Image (cartoon, rainbow, N blue to C red):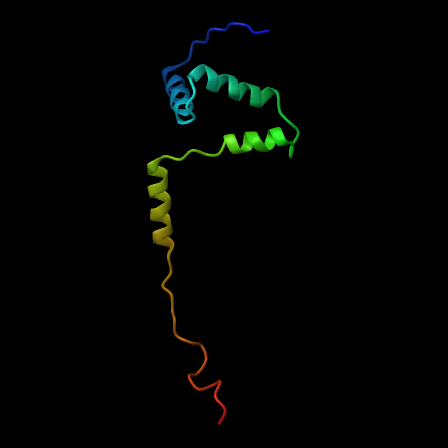
Length: 94
């Protein structure tokens, strides 16, 4: 059984839903139904359905997000010191 519902959404919500749906290859109405179903009809944690849903819901990042992450990694790099903490001939027998 299904019912028809008409929603009036603010522009910013409509645009966000449209973007989110397009990243998953869905129409906005399909995306809304999927999200409502997940919110109100959940599978037990660890169940095959829950695992499959978690895989479907993998985070989608933009190229800007990737660039920001790469920049943060680059800024956080520390120089590597390849010099030994041991003396050169410490392991040699005298």
